[in-house]
Length: 216
Image 1 (cartoon, rainbow, N blue to C red):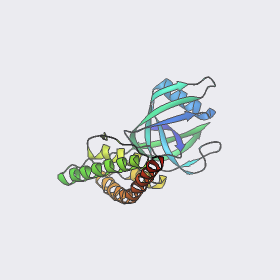
Image 2 (cartoon, one colour):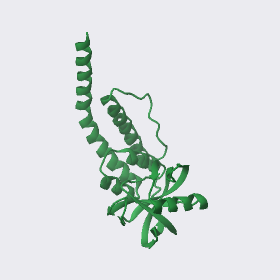
Image 3 (cartoon, rainbow, N blue to C red):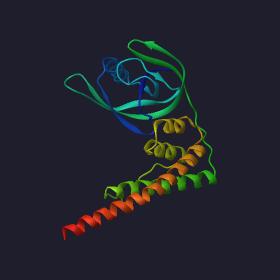
Image 4 (spheres, helix red, strand yellow):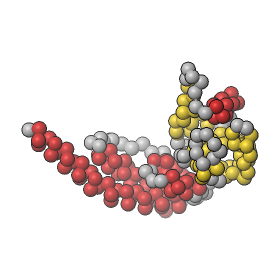
């Protein structure tokens, strides 16, 4: 399978969306062709190089992206929203001026289902909901419910896309085909993050009470 590649300093997970502002001529051309032909392109993390200007060397695993919304601006730039669809592995890259094109294989995911995997998904979902609520509480916000997708694989991708971890950690999650492994890793990360968030929430609440007391 051949697809145009868009190397970025971001990791896109299947089932999740990202906005993109397209201003370079090479990517305006690429995105315009994808819109006209209703075809996907590949979002892939940069290993070396920069998003803008010169060539960028991508990693081996990325996600196919389909454009779900596009807005052409007066100056010819584009704002697009894309949704991730399938993981892929790059088999070869060539420069078809002015952008990269990759020969890729779509990665099939491990679709194992059993009670222990369901338990892992339930645990990860509970921890992620707590993680979101604590992050909101730091800035005096709250959420009644946290909507999450059903199924271990989609849930693992949903959480991985939203974790506040570095890009290399996200990329390792993307490259892992087993939902079981991804969920276990995310449970560990969420547990550590929640432990760090609790004192931040207490400090934020204390600061708000102190501010209110000073006003009275």
